[in-house]
Image (cartoon, rainbow, N blue to C red; front, side):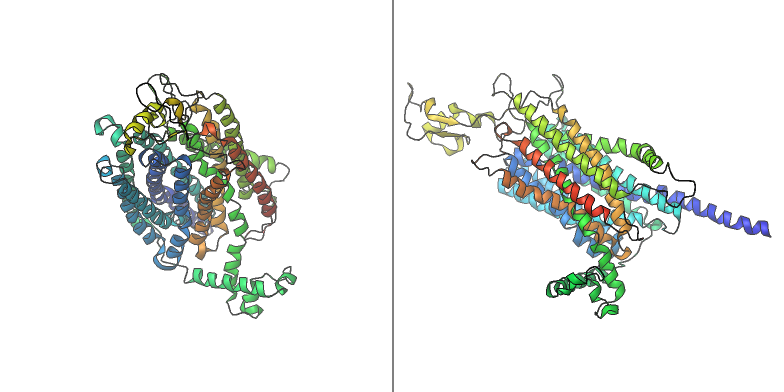
Length: 600
């Protein structure tokens, strides 16, 4: 009997272990696959949208950067709505399904807007359909991003220690799949958008074909996700109005804090939100107040991530603008698509996540625990995620410092335009003729506005004509043709790799940290707050660009022709902001008390 009693728990544990092993492979892997397809769709569009705006809508560098930042930021800011809807009304499963269907509608609109046959109707109509499509995608993304990782984590049993460990692996593989989708987008799809496919309309149809691929990818995402519906742990909305009640508690707490100076005097003994609880004479349940407090303590650490995502936003904005004026040639027959350099960010993540997981982190832990005896409760079982986030900030700073040094070198190797070299910028607005004095002569003779080179003008007071009766060239001023430096675009690789390492340390760790520290009924909303920081990083890029383009002498740091600007100053500014932010992050991280009461 004793033997039987001993064996029964062992069998039960074996059964649990088998169930545990199957979760990542037979259940969570389908959620990871869905994330891969959705991110391939998103980055398939994001990787070339700036180039599309510059080439097809004739936007300047700064204008296209601002439009991209507005759209990308909105995609993340709206995540709070998607998290609220999932927690309060639909649940995560239904929210993901409905949002995915809306996603396809937006992608189809973007694909149509890029078709050359559609452009012939009206340039304004193209712009309208493009922006309508991308903002529909923003709304759709808001229902997926804050819920899909949380939904995947819910498939694991938190009462099983091995399941808890496997859930941590899920976050790694989840982020890994995100970057695998991005890598395909920044290689295959960006190449198609820039150069087209010979048998499918060539370069003329490049953007249209390239933007159609994400539509099919999103369709596959839906099919993959629903194919395992019978195996998912699906819960309905479990907020029970918690999100709304939390908002009311927070609002009332702020009012009391402003009205009463006692909040300051009692702050050491009584949290400013505790005054609202029933046990302290307030009108709100103690448990609801504790939920709000649990989220509030995360807020400083959440928003200290924003500068990191300002630097992350440079992957698709200033880094690409810089690449436009570099040498894209890898020989006489091969050129690098500008947005393809993003692959080195994703490659760094795909290759180094296993290295950090299996080599770097275990080594750091072994060094940290070297002085502890076996079984000592003080031994660390894992590296504090906030420590990893801090090191991620350091690598982000290194990325923009390197970019600044490299930009100075790039400009030193830039030469004036020569027709026989064809060394004009690869993101040139219009054509070289738009900078031609000869073309301006032809325009001036006939005064046909449709022939006027937009970057040339007549010098005031100069009326001299040449021997054939045309306006003399000395009376015409044209902007210099933006030229590409002879410096190879491959010199950009380190800055992309540094950002990738920063993501491994900061983004993945933050994803796991904020999930584990959030109240269960507020996990989608907390995940959304984490995503909002990404959106704010994109949005804060906008005023930064505006500010640096209004210099004391009217000089622009980020003009259309970077050879005439000071992009390196912009990168040094970002490095300074990130450095100060890292100091502030260390200050707050050291004072953070986790949900289990541990002070870091």
